[in-house]
Image 1 (spheres, rainbow, N blue to C red):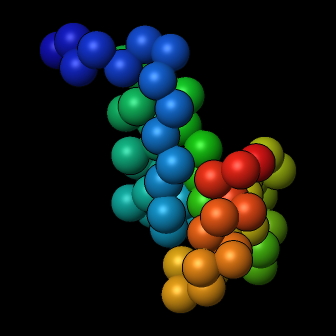
Image 2: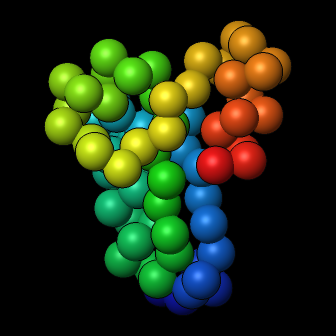
Length: 68
């Protein structure tokens, strides 16, 4: 299936969880760039080194994550 994701960037909230990781894998399989975004502790527990620390209830955190 071609979802036309080649070169597109997806910021996946909850990216450290099992569903987030599966979504990231699917996006990468379609040629997209998946960025896992979650709380730092979740990213560390899931051993995601290149994730973005994000608290979705904090507007400053949201802006910082998008700017990264």
